[in-house]
Amino acid sequence: MSSPLREILARGRVYAVANQKGGVGKTTTAINLGTALTAVGKRVLIIDIDPQGNASTGLGIAPERRTLTTYEVLMGEVELARAVIATEVPQLDLVPATVDLSAVEVELAEDPRRVWRLRDALRRFREPYDYIFVDCPPSLGVLTLNALVAAHGVIVPLQCEFFALEGLGLLLRTIERVRRAHNPRLAVHGVVLTMYDRRNNLSAQVAEDVRAFLGDRVFRTVIPRNVRISEAPSHGKPVMLYDVRCAGAEAYARLAGEMLERERDAA
Image (cartoon, rainbow, N blue to C red; front, side, top):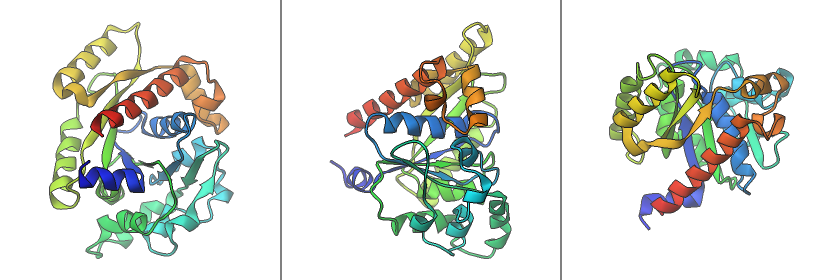
């Protein structure tokens, strides 16, 4: 087994869930993929690095419970372990976020290691998680760069809608620049097609175009457009808990299985 892969297996896999476009299913994918992995015995941590705090809300963490957040971690005020809180999902923990994160880019503007803050925090972190998902904001600023520098791989949710590929080239170029300059282990672990509507010919065409462009980097599993997925965050629950039998929950269960399959093949 190669040395980089030994490091990943020993310290837990860190995945940035990223796309600079908003509304493509980043947070939905992070919390539901994480929940699905706990169902097969994995221990998962989600780091919310989006100032909107949607992952925190989607996991039922009220603002008053977010006393220590990724802001304090990135500013070096607390160790990462102190900011971790439990969620209602067994085996799934969270580092929450608040709007304070929006100040990080300005406050760290003069820091030459501003994009290394999360990686440095994770290197000091000793909790035994199998997976760490970093839910990124819809931009390619310093917060997303922190996630990319810290990650072993990137999971890219991509909606099956018109202009789906618009901007993807920029994200892939950014990933390549980060790989060359800061993080040689970084790679696209997989692209997840989201909001797929089988009744809509456009969804099928977009899926075909994306697979032609990216090949086997695209997961076989597609996440359908599903009302239960949309409803679940308002109840502070992953769809896996809100309605485990709905099409969306079943799709995320399949996606988790496919992730595990890919990692077995890589080993």
